[in-house]
Amino acid sequence: MTARSLATIALAVTLVVALAATPLPASGAATGLGDTAVSPTEVTTGEPTPLDLSVNATGVNTTDGTTGATVTVSAPDAVDLSGATVDSKSVTPNATGVDASVDAAANAVTVSWDDDAGADAETLAVSVRLTGVVVGRTGSHDLTATVDADADGTTDVQGPVGTVTATASGSDRSAAAGDSLFLGEEDVDLTGVAGVAPAGESQRFYGVGGEAEGSVATVPNTTAADVSLGNGFTPGTYNLSSSSGTDDVVVERPSVRSLDVYPGSSTGETEVDGSSVPASVGTLTVEPRFNFAPADDATLIVENEAGLEVTGELTANPRVTASGQTVTLDVADLSTGTYTIRVEGADELDHVNATTTVRIRSEARTVTLSRTTVARGEPTVATVSGEPGSVHYLRLSGDALRDGSRLTVPTARADTRNSLSMSSVAVRSLVPSGMSNS
Image (cartoon, rainbow, N blue to C red):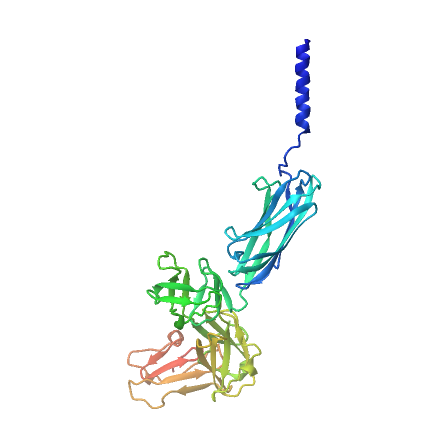
């Protein structure tokens, strides 16, 4: 080997050694995300609150003299940081020059630091306390963190910090997209509806369908909206802007759709609303059906013939929280008479109601006529009472029938569900019954 060749090899070895001795920049590839937290996790919509954020960045090289390393916590628009200020911040261990700032445009807070002669795989505990944070919308909102441990402007690792759940404490309920509002309900939190103005702000609604078409409704505060005629609401569909192409809000007229009463402790028997039962039946089951359950409960009220309320004597819990839920009434000790049963909205919607009656009678089976003297061709109504569900027979003289007509048990049973006109006599049973003539 020539002297020139030996010199070339020596130079190459020298270059390799020199390159190996040069410190490599931290790549951030080993940086990870450890424990994270946000506190509190439950807040009130629209009210300023402090927020404590903590992020553990793992595998951080604090030996290479990096300056301006960062952890950034970003929040969705619903968690408004634009008015927030940094109350305190901390990065430990082996960090100096710790600083923190809020970026209102990005809706994020960034904590920065410089290395302070630590280790090549350090776990740094980064924390910041913000005051004046306002969560403008009801619901759950996720916060995320990004770490740039080597200050090269790229994200080393990203992950969740935690979830802040906001509720509107001054509202009766919170509506979400697709929920119906009911005319007459008050203090509805609308901030969960996409596109609605955040807490504390007003919102205008443009009617596009139903009775609402062409009208405009306005609420001064979206966390406590009154769905009232005074605010311009009528039943129908609304958009959030005059140019919107979607139906964003639906307002319904609250109503009680049906009110059925059954003998016994279930709904399996024949309905007796508008009819009579003996006190020995023991219990009555009342089944109201209504459309306003999302906005209000319903309550049952029972009054005697004098108009005095006797509900408390019959049930300990007259309130129902869902349409079709039943209330059982103990009628064993009720005196003979007609009782009015009314169901209505329990709170704000107490103007929405429906009524029926039930007569408590003696045990004896009876037949009563609405008129005992009639001319040929005029009707009278025969009311047959007895044990609910039993079969009763009403005997009529054949002379009462028109010429050529014939009354049979099958035809009588079919017709007495409503009424049966037999010459001058109309027969209606309070319970399913059979009839025959002789």
